[in-house]
Length: 344
Image 1 (cartoon, rainbow, N blue to C red):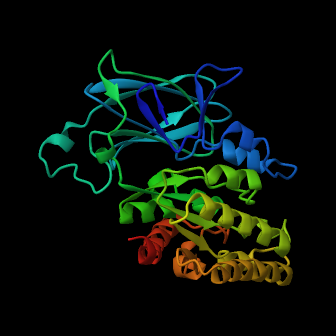
Image 2 (cartoon, helix red, strand yellow; image 1 turned 30 degrees about the vertical axis):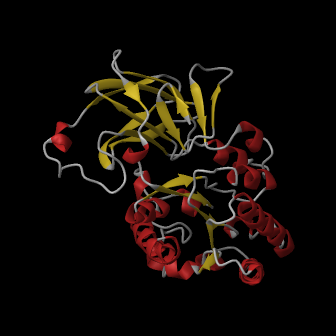
């Protein structure tokens, strides 16, 4: 999406807020958010409203400029990059408009070799939203200098869409979004990620599927589903939702690779859960995915073994649920190895 000569990557909707100035940045459009399945805490609508891994991308000749942002419901953070090169992390305090002063790092331009990358051109400024908050964009002041969206040859050639749980969302990967395992895999492969993951949710709702499959600028789809559905949905309900997700993805994208990951095996051993009951459900989910893909006869549909990506407990945090920052990095490299068998 292009707005004010800026590319808004992974942003499905830019909308006015009824109480605040500026433009609200959302990974999911409002009409989808309103139809999400939710428990009494309504985690789905909140998760879909987060601006995580939305990006502002632009090129300007101005060597110093100002970015104006605010946070809607709680404090947030952003990372700024010159191309693939980390520039800095900034707090976005809610309740006020934050002004971030940016000065170009000239060292990237001293030689042709400096600032080289297989993804982003070093002239592309990238503002990446972190933490679980909804960002509001107020503008970029380049003092009447030119500003433009990046050209195609200044960006990664290929993109994959990731839909999954908090694990794929990048929970506990630290402040830097490029340490989540999908982002590590993407950088290893020279891709970029359109991250539509839903922490505490990811229930494969029909309206989510209908939105995801309309994302056309995607080279392949990667689905990590089922984990958050284990205590909420039957095997039959999961199977129906998975089938609809895969059928619709294939209908809208006849030749693209669709990769699913079976339920992360570590979820079979969550404390205080009925392991026998949960394991039976997870077995059913995994079997439903395996049978669907095997019976489809579709050579461009693949089911990955989660243990090939997350091989042991040492990659988890103390909650025995989410990967640590180190775990995300290892998982990202493992994921890159697995999907490179099919997408390169």
